[in-house]
Image (cartoon, rainbow, N blue to C red; front, side):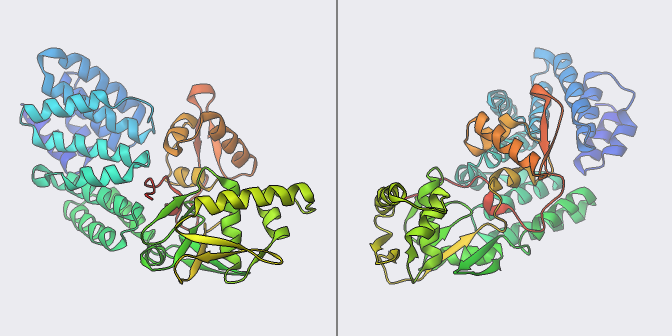
Length: 406
């Protein structure tokens, strides 16, 4: 390997893309193309980076499988940055296995990190945590070590393990500062800011107070019954009942929780569940049916007792009922949460991450754009969606979550 290629590779390893480009900017040989592509990706020129990496992979061909595999890994990372989540990760897995077989432990570890990052974006957080736990990080460069710590912190935050997240963020910050990677330092600081921003609201009657992520984690760990409007679940320490795909039932559960220890009137519940301000016999009959379904869904967690005015929630154990809601009552908060990362998403990628149909996702995007909360660029398959500005609160709890158990 010649001196220019070596110098460019070392610059990229410490996150200095401009220095790397100075070394290889005029080179069109396969190693030069690959390093130029990686440098352009670090500078945010993702379209040009992908083109350079594909040229490099074709030039390496079957005669240099390790170099070609490295290009595939770099291109897969760009696919994540552009939120191209629909693309199969089979080529990435094959490239990672080849790197492992050929003894390129550092790049194989980098490929594992890309695989895990994809799992996180798709909301498969528990599997991502399992994969992270098995990583042998001894081959990691200082830059990759910092990135893996940042990824560990994100997974811990999604799983509501705030103490683990703080430790991982601290390690990531020290590693990023040690190599002088200013962009990575800023990214770590942004991640740390989610711990100091409101993540939810606790509601009792007409009163509402903000909660930090660690406050929500403490509620999850408590003995109480939590009706979580962020993830649309009802849970205690042992059992979780998901109502994410049953909006009417969750609206009733939230109404009952906010009224606890009192009861919620039939008129209040009909307004919440069906949107009617003038309830009639048909609404009241439908309410009885939906309350019956809610009783079945919450079996083992709580009873629902009929009262003279309406219905009351009664936990199976004599514990407190806590109702938490998103920091804002946007109808499509989960879409806003994904767009809040500053990346441009396609509707197909959003649908994949949310586990929803593309048509449902497109309707949500159109409604949010009409309200001025998101904006689009491009047309047809090239159309992408972004949030105009970051919200003054963390949308962490609105992101696709681990599948509830129970």
